[in-house]
Image (cartoon, rainbow, N blue to C red):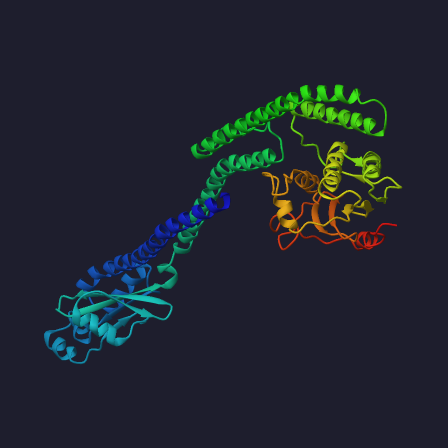
Length: 490
């Protein structure tokens, strides 16, 4: 916007300068020409009184010399008039006889052509003609004899254009100054308009990053002030909606405490035994999760911590802990379990609670949607810039992986809400990774969680899941080769 305004002002100012400067320059040139020829007319007029008195060559030479214009002035007297002045001093007979033998008188340097002089004498009015190096003014003068003498005044080209170049240079300087001034004014106006717009854009980005306290100063042009008011109102509404959602989540979670208390009391009365211990552990875990939800919902601070800054966990440790919990239930159902890649720490930029929730969702789906005795495995593959957490089973598999990833907005035909896979997808995408569903080497479902370690945002080409709409990225060769090894049960 800023540069567009500058360009418009430059274009408009340039057109105005050209519209005024070009005609004014032409007028100045014409005025200089008129001045030069006016001076030439005055010089020719200074000779006219002398010509009306005498046509004597010697006297006329003195008059021309006294005028100081002998170098650029010439006088052309016809032969018929030249004898009148010379014969006035003799007798009458001598005068009559001498008139027939007189020649035309030409004083000074003749530059004009004879035909131009003859035309001026015939027409009886002044004229100009072009000659080498300039122009000449041919001024006719009536003599006492009735003949016409012609005074020729030379006007050099330098005198015709005297002062024109300077005037044009001044006009060009004034025009350039006007253009520069218009650019400066347009730039200041552009800054006044662009800065509020830039602040509005920056605030929108910050709000999108989760900085809910950002607001836009209400300044600048009227339209931008109205946009700032609308943005601030929208931000206030977003904050209020989030507060309402947190309160609602906390209230709904708090309602679960009553049935949880009853469930805990009933679990305490089950006595001793592995099943009773597992039930009590599950109830305790459920109660801890409800408490976590309530505390998180009541916390009004936006959860916008940067990846890798105070957020992260050891994926291997979390997998070992959760597999210890689920292995007891797997043993009761006769399921074969394998865990790989958890013998050394694997740091990922994901909160521990989020990874626990994602693993529990996937493992819970295995127990919920496969028959007893179905084997499953959890593998962790660590690479230079990514970590793969692979959960696979030997069940019937998922017929439509894309539809499974798209669920989460309601219950499906098999009783699944799809919220578990949605939790897993959000965890992976928060790091720049993704989730894919495929066929495992065990013959069932394979859910691959790709956790990006460098925080790059993937290029989205459609919905989550497999197929043409899956997000694409270059897979590290070393991680892929590691991932392709040991994917079957021992």
